[in-house]
Amino acid sequence: ELTRFAQRLGQGNFATSSMDYKDAELAALAASMNKAAVQLDQYDKEQKVFFQNVSHELRTPLQVIRNHAEGIQHGILNTDKSSSVIIHESDRLGDMVEDLLYLSRIDAMSPGRRFELADLREILSNSAERQGSLAAQKGIDYIFDFDLDPVEFFCDEPGMVRAFDNLIANALRYAKSQIILVCKKAEDRIEVAVVDDGQGFSSEDLPHVFQRFYKGKGGDHGIGLAIVQAVVAQHGGVVDAHNDGGAIITMSFPQGERDGTA
Image (cartoon, rainbow, N blue to C red):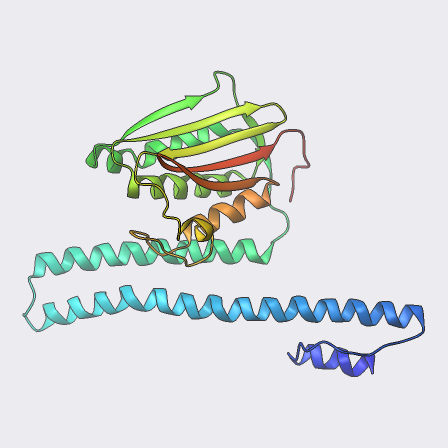
């Protein structure tokens, strides 16, 4: 019976079994297999939803690019305007693909990721600088609320860079005039926050902001904050979103030494 159960799992049938054994070892094995079946079923459903959402998100910019390319080909659309749209949508598509690839690498939990000591103030300020031209175009000022001393943390720096980049890009989408960047040590934790002076999260959006492919009003493709949550979780931290005037996203990481690999 257990062998047939294992074969069903291998064939993609993740229905649990109602088998009951008096032998303690067989009962324990059956319970473990049932637990595995539930986990596999959940993962299978999540993957199907993930690919459905990916297909939908990729289809829209591809259709826009095709429409404008055909318009140019047939001479019914302005070449300069359509070219700008095609470039914009291509960039958006490229960013989306990069985010999807990064998210898939996180899900794969690939071993051997290096954790090295880095100053989070430096990573956060560099992320802000990379998007400084966009902030200047929108008339948005950065305000840095950093500890004077280094805020050092063992981290996967490329992952942290992507998380900070996504947070600042999200804040730039909604801020009116300023973004406050916080990076400080607090007792046994490290606190990082990105605060904008926009309208904040709506009550409908707030419970879902870290959900994959969830897009609130003015959102892009709904992957950025999901990546932030995944990166923070990789580092044993927690992330939270709330309102206080504008939107505030805070990350809290445990201080202390850790092994150099994940």
